[in-house]
Image 1 (cartoon, helix red, strand yellow):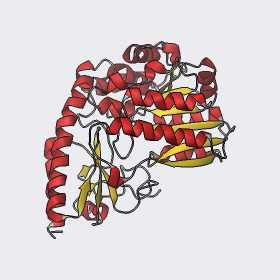
Image 2 (cartoon, rainbow, N blue to C red):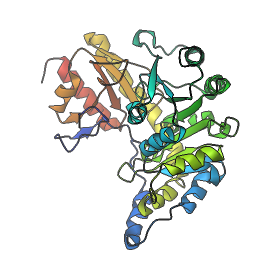
Image 3 (spheres, rainbow, N blue to C red):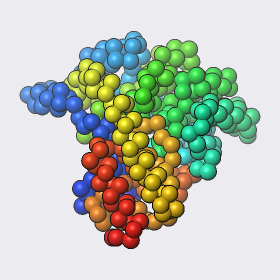
Image 4 (cartoon, rainbow, N blue to C red):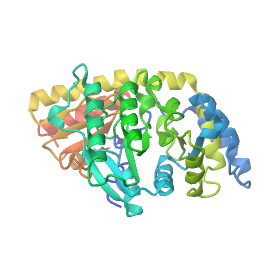
Length: 370
């Protein structure tokens, strides 16, 4: 496996600090750890194939009916199952975005059309930028509906907030985008895995809109939100009973383990943790961003882009992946993201002390100290 597929290559390298995976920097809640430990005596049991207690807990967490929820062994399993269920003749993907969407389309041999949605020289934090992004995306969807793929069964997949740029479109703008796609009969997989890291983000979720749009699926990653990638748990919400049943056909039996169900049920009760996360991140992210911007002004060889979430996209003329790895620090090489390429890197936002250590390491590199 190539190093830059997902990040997190801590087994292949000597790593002291892992900035390549964008998990919640607050760490796994203690109640989640305890819930997993308490499952040790139940390992001889088969899981509930309908994970009923988990769906009830998630229904309260998301404020929806439990029958609208499908869970999986991480968001990645649900992406693959959703594409298989819809069997689109064409997939529309924004560029850049999470590689897993393209991988799922390729696995089924689906025609893929890439929509250029980001240019680094145009990325700003100016007021109104979010609404401009929504308008731009609507135009891309409209143009795709009028292209040579017209009449084909089409699925749009995108992340909001975007991975890896951190760009975020508010609910009003995303609703316009979904409506534009619905007018053309497109299915839409909206990945909100990083929305819980946005300050006030839950108010911007489109989970409540799935009843209005039968072709809309909203994806969430509890793995990311509660820092538990070793457990693997994701959820997808859709108001279409037919679509839910079809997705379920492409999921294996017992795909949610007893420890994963227990972890999820404990996690959604962590209201203080959930509320604290975006506040903590906003402060840590701005501190890290300011430090990188200062290095950029000093050296002229480092750029950091605006982000609403728990990671930052940066651009540098130095080979930062290999240079930082020599110091035991792992970052995400974004060379394989369409629309980015060599010189782009994604770094997670972590605790203040860890962020300071990364800034010090970057300072050494740009001052010529290996």
